[in-house]
Structures are given as C-alpha cells and as structure tokens.
Length: 439
Image (tube, rainbow, N blue to C red; front, side, top):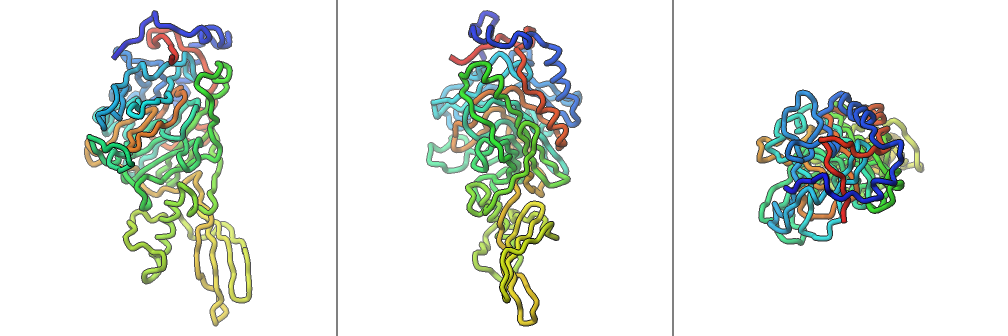
C-alpha cells in the first residue's frame, strides 16, 4: 500500500478558502469525538483522521473492543470476479476537513470493473461487538455525509451475495447473501432518504430475490457535485442514521436527527414496498380456511408480514349502503380497507381486507438479526460500498465519519449526534496524514 507523505500536494483553495475561526480547533474535534464515544452502546467510530501505524484508517473503539478495526482498501469486483485492478488508499481522496476533521471521497468510478470499498474482513469481526446479531440484539449506525449521487449502501455488514444472475458476467467466487444490518440512502424505497436495512436470514425476503425489510425517511439528502466550492460543501453535511430496536420490533431512520413518520399509500403498487405488501396479503389469505383466490401455496410462511392488528386506533367509514359498508382501520403499522357485508341476521361480517397503507418509518420488523452459524457464513463490515451481484456504482460523495452502537439510540441521542455538522479542518498531528483531493 502506498503511503502518503508530508510533501504531497494540497490544493490552494483548501488552504485559503475555509473560515479562519475554524482552523486548528483540536479541542472542538476532541469534544465531538467524546460526544460519540460517551453515548451508551458505543462500539466504534471511524473519523478518517485516526490511523494505525501502517497508515490505514483505524477506529476509536469502546474500551472492551479489542479487535483490529483498521480498514482495508479493496475492489470487490477483483475479489469476486477476478476483474479490474486492485484498490488502494489513493482511491479514497481526502477532503482536508469534515465534521470530525477529515472526510473521504467515494468517487463516480467509470470503470464497471472497479468498485472500491473500505473493508474489515469477517475473521476480524466475527463474534465481536461490531458483529451485532441474534436474539435480543439491537443496533444503530450513524454517518456524516455529503451526497453527490446514488442511493445505495453507506456502511454495515451487508454482503448481498454474488450468486444472483443479473445479466452480467458470472462471478468466479460465488457466495450467498450474508446480510445483517446496514445504513443506506433509500434504494427504490425513497432514493436519497436515510434508510436502515436489516435481515433475519442473510438473504431474500417476501418471495423476492432481494432483502426488503427497510425503513426510510420521507426527506432526501440533497445532491451536490463533489467539486463544488468549499462554502457549498461546508453547508451540505447531513447526518443519516437508523436504529433497530429489537424489543420494540422497529427499524427507525433519521435524517439530521429527525425521524419523520412515513406512510406509503397503496403499497402493493410501490416499486419497493410491494414485497412486504405481498407478504401481508399472503398471510391474510393463508389465515382463511381452504385455498383462496390469489393465494400462493409455495409462499414461505416465515416471510409472512404480520404487523400487530389487534385493535384499530381509528375506524373511518368510507362508504355505506343498506347491505355493505367500507371502513378504513388504522393500526400502528398498517391501514386496512375493510369491506363488510350484512348477513340475513342483520349483522355485518368482514368480506374482504385490503392493505391501504404501510408505515415505513418506523418499519415493523419482528425478527432477530441474521446470526451466521460459522465464520464462513458471515459477511465483512464495509464502508462506502457493499458486495453485490449487480456491481452498481453505489452512493458517491463524501463520508466524514461512521459510528456503530450495539443498542437502539433514542431520538434525543440521535438529535445530539446530528448537531455535529459544521466542519473543522484536518488536525496537524501524527495521527493524520496530509490531505489531498482527487485529480
């Protein structure tokens, strides 16, 4: 790996254009780090300033975390398809400042065989606190970003597998999905929104070939060109986060410390949420005696989507005749259109239930996170991109830090972390190497 040296070129605008009162504020940077580290459940923080003796990005770690959490530069296309060149740290240019003093750039790579990411191999995290999984375990991920383009992964344990047929060249190293948890920017659920993605089986859900358990904010992180003027980059920092609360069975996504409630109307027609909607429908049909019209006998029962619908929070009459009444029943995570028909006795009975709306922030997830039975069945922790069969470009822009906690952070804790946004310059110390920009 090529090392950075003191003589490397720093663009002039990086030296002159930043506000003078922000220069050299190491005490403010230390305060921000402590705000993260002292948050209950803290596991690790990568601020892209702290480095190991070999120059790799290292993590601020909780006292009881002893694992090596330095980040390796890797091109996963080369690893799994034997195509493209190897990645190095030079493929992650430094901005020279950020919410914690530095930021890396995830570039719009034009070579389809080059998808660099920062990775901690599975053998260094298996059964560690970073490896959040299994019964009763909750997790939160927070990242400080400037979004240039895209709507894919930011950080987490989310190996999507290389076994899916996507029309491209087949992988030479084929592995099944090994998903646990990850922070995304919305996917087709709401491209650019803060999104928490979780999996109970490492693979697919609701009869689709992809994982579809995801919460997302209705708001989006605005896009900004990576070569924008410094003052525009300064103002563009966003804090994206999610918390999976195992006890409450919820995944909640936050943008700049706010978790706005989000409902998707007519989810069966939505490009992403049609899949949990299908899981809901199949559960409804299966609960009735005999095989119903539209019921798929092969649908996996462990993929039924059944949020609690014991007692409606509200009932609204939508229409009514002498023989039929249509109501909207609102529950915690669903809104159900219920058609009732009058029997000869005069009593109304339910004739049909249709999913009218699905709550996706928070999103109901009544499972434990996927727990690999062995080291080989678990995925790595990655930042910037995740391993995926379609080898997409992913999210591009700047990453100022990533933090992981092994509990569900509260709204007030998320709001406190989101206050860390105004950038400070890279510290002039032995732990930081000279900042540089992409050509």
